[in-house]
Image (cartoon, rainbow, N blue to C red; front, side, top):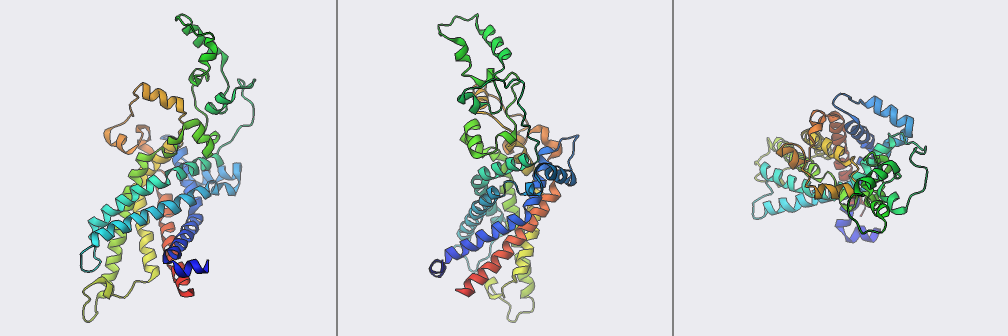
Length: 379
């Protein structure tokens, strides 16, 4: 480890950044859990409050339930924030190329932040989906009883496709009766029909979220593409967040530099000639920027959370493609992944997300500066 830190400056920054992200995520994770459960569990006429969510999680999973799925979000944040700041630095370096000083226009920072946010969403979406379903599981009352229809063993294929369900023989016999009038040379029509799970459930309802939250369960039931469910609203959320976060941070940073430059003799020509800002001031600016960006992008966050809690088996996705199913909503809603039924609840939990994002941004930036100072000075 000592040799790695002495020979590779990049490793020093990577270790400091990863530790800061994990620390900031751990500190604010209960706020994220409460916010997510309010978004998912609220209806237009059924609002949820933070005390009700905490009471339910404590009763069903204990206080440790507030940290359900933490490890998935921690990994997602490490890769996601690494992608966000990496892409941002590359794009801003391209903007600065050939200029005197390191000045950046706010519009350039905004565009670089939007591009960086889109890349972050592509990177972190699978981790956030698993995290969200683990959070919902912590607040769900999982029945261990055997359903009325579950009185006989089923084959492994059906068990994978319809987790928690067994054949409804009444629905199956009805389907066979409807198809019996057709001319068929198949030797065993009933066995053939059993290969199509949508004729087996009777109710047509997919499994609950708490039955499909592990990666293996999601992939086997919904396919690999399900890991990126809610990508449209996620890209919209992270693009807006990244653009507003970096542009607000740049404005505050420039304002603090201009304030420090007042009274300097001779006046500085470039920002590099001004004394460095204190880590506390930079961290406070990052925290405020995070809160503002969270407020602006919260509607997309709610749409993403609710879409990721929808269990969509592979055979239903296949039916939708065959039937050319159209996504409901207006053009903007289709583009950003907002369901029309969620229009009145898009801003549920906004204060919790603002607090979570602001505190996390402050802690991550502050602890990163402290870690770099310690690691560099000790080596």
